[in-house]
Amino acid sequence: MHTPALLKEAVESLNVTSGDKFIDATFGEGGYSQEILRRGGKVLAIDLDRDQIQNLKSKIPNLKLIQGNFANVEEIAKENDFFPVAGVIFDLGLSMGQIENSGRGFSYKKTDEPLDMRIDAVNQTTAAADLIRQKSPTELYEVLAKNSEEIKSKIIAEEIKRGRKMESVGDLIGAIDRAVGFKSQSVYARIFQALRMEINHELDNLKRALAGASRILKKNGRIVVVSFHSLEDRIVKNFGKQYRFLNKKPYSKKLGLSFERSAKIRTIII
Image 1 (cartoon, rainbow, N blue to C red):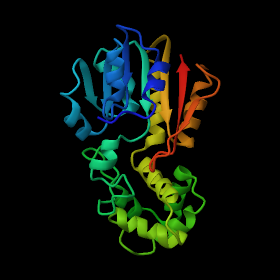
Image 2 (image 1 turned 90 degrees about the vertical axis):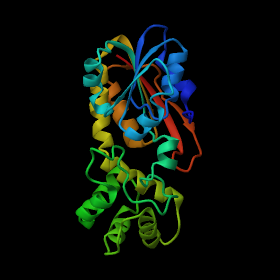
Image 3 (image 1 turned 135 degrees about the horizontal axis):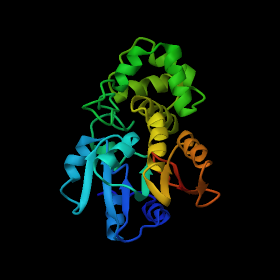
Image 4 (image 1 turned 45 degrees about the vertical axis):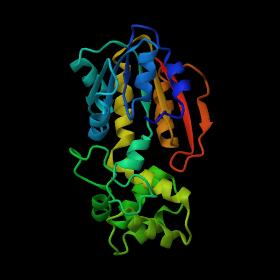
């Protein structure tokens, strides 16, 4: 199993106490759930990706693992009689397994994979290739600019919509190269991230998730969020202003990975 980059720091921020209930709202490959269980906590874990759940459900004992969207964390906790809880943890990055093995085009390095990017490939009907077909150049530019903050979003959107097919990762990489005029992994990463965030409604889901988590916490319960994007961090920061942060400044760390270059941890005490 892949170990999350900030596992130790995030779980310590969660302040796990033996016997208390915790929700791992983004199960991934189970790193956080395993560590919380090791420290004596009880865990309800949630993941949107059915493949992740099927692959790992039987490998971690004493774990309740639910397929669902973390935006519905409040409803899932109540349906499973798992509240109030002492803490909820969110890791907003993709797991290594999804990037390397899903076959859904999450990585710009997997040029033969389809341009899909759906985390829930069963219930989500619109893949990245569909979104590109459906949007006008202006609409696509707005998606890329909003979610990536990439300064070349306009010319990239125009090149993507120039008429060539956009069905594979390689097709999208080719369009980005033609628009920018050179190969840039940082541009690839921002554009892929922008499309993935739009397809999976990640920013809207985060807002709903934070609000729902706040309603199922015990007094002085904690929400811990590991984020990898300035837009995600801004949402967490703004939400936390109505409560209080464990630390005035978030813990941050440069990762140096091709798909995630830096991460921040914010801990909100409700």
